Image (tube, rainbow, N blue to C red):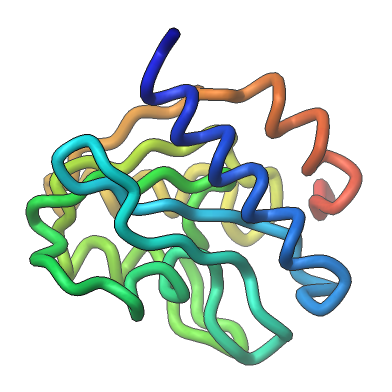
Length: 143
């Protein structure tokens, strides 16, 4: 079994906990892994509060530079009611970021991944893509 897929599927399970409170934002889940163990979990909170990545990061007790982050949707690239998650990850510089699917939202569409790339943060796109897409697609803004 693929350990990275297992972690992403756990993030997918966390995303379900975001509903219905996160709406109109999509229900995103995140897990943070340190030395092969899940050490923090998060999901999108009510509008104006933490997104999944920041919710999980807020609970960390080890240096983020030693951690892998698994998040179901590309980190947001823009300031809305909350700051950009991609910019925050770029500042914090986790060891690696795993993203299930790209965000089709017109204000994002790869811009979050570009922020990570430009900051030199390693990331992998597509882990658990099918499973996450099946759950998340109806919640995403596509135009």
